[in-house]
Image 1: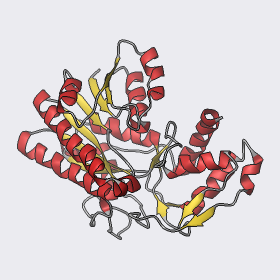
Image 2: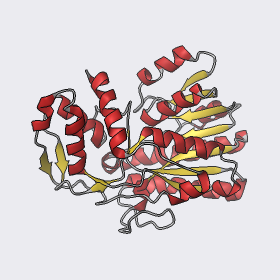
Image 3: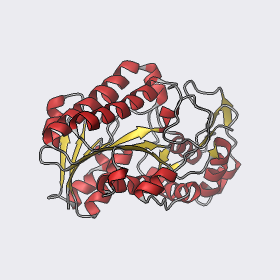
Image 4: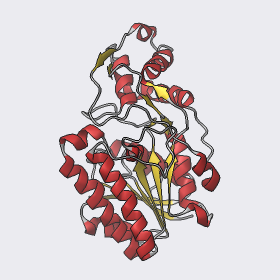
Amino acid sequence: MSKILVTGGAGFIGSNLCESLLSDGHEIVCLDNFATGHIENLLPLISAYPSKFKLIVGDIRNLADCQKAVDGVEYILHEAALGSVPRSIKDPITSNDVNVGGFLNMLVAARDAGVRRFVFAASSSTYGDSKSLPKVEDVIGKPLSPYAITKYVNELYADVFAKTYGLEYVGLRYFNVFGRRQDPNGAYAAVIPLFVKKFMNHEAPNINGDGEYSRDFTYIDNVIQMNKLALFSENKDAVNQIYNTAFGERTTLNMLVEYLKEFLSEYDEEIKNIVPTHGPNRAGDIPHSLASIDKAKRLLNYAPQFSMKQGLKEACKWYWEYLK
C-alpha cells in the first residue's frame, strides 16, 4: 500500500480517485483550496478513513503548500486545475497562474521530494484545430483557447522534468469526463450535469449550435481505472508518456439529449416531452472529438468498462438521488 497525494481531491474527479484508492487500502493526502471543489465530497472519506485520509487546505500557486503536501508521498495524482474553456477565455491570467504556475510548483515539489511517479490530468483540448479523427496522441493542432495552451504547456513541462531531473510522469488527456459528483451548478458547469439539472427542473436545455458537434464522453469509472494503471504500471515503456483517456466512441449533443430524456423519464415521464433550444456555437469549441485508445490498451492494458450510455444511465440515477 502506498501514500498518494491527490491535488484537487475535493473536486469531481479528485474525490472519486480519493475514494477508490482509499477503498483499495492506500493512504491519501488531499490538497485543495476549494476554489471549485466541495468539502461535501470529502466528508464521507474523512469519517470513514480517519487514519488513512489527510486533508490539507492549500493552493498549488503557493510552493510552500505544495512542499507540505508532498512530504512523505510516493505518488502524485495531480488533478488540481481551473477547468473550462469559457472561464479561460474570460480570465486567461488566473487560468494560467493555476494551470501553469501551480503545475510547475507541483513538479518542483515532486522532484525535490523524490516522488516515484507524477500522474497528471491533461486534456483533449490539446488537439486544438486538428481535424483528424480519431485523435492520436502524437498528432495535435494549434490550441483554440487559453485553457488548451495551459494544458499543453503541462505536457511540455512534464517531459522536460523527466529528461532533466529523471521525474517519472504519465499525462492523461481526459475526454469530457462525466459521472457522480460532477457539479451541476455554477457558470462553468459541464454539459451533462447542466442538462440533467435543466431536465429535472422541467426547463429546456440550450444546445450550442445545431447539436451535431460530437464528443467522446467518458464515464468516471473508466478514468479511475486509467489513473490506477498509470500510477502503478511496471511497464517501463508505459511511463513518460501521454495517453488519451476516453471510451473511444462519439456522441453528438442531439444524441446526448435523447439519451438523457430516455434515462431521466424513467423517474419523471414529463421529461420526455421537453424540447431543447439552440444558440450560437461557443468560442473555443472544437466541432468533433473522438479518441483513439489503442496506445493505452497496448501499454497500460486499459480496458474501459462503461460505454457512454452505460455511464450516463448510472449518472442519471445518481443525479436523481442527489438533486432531489
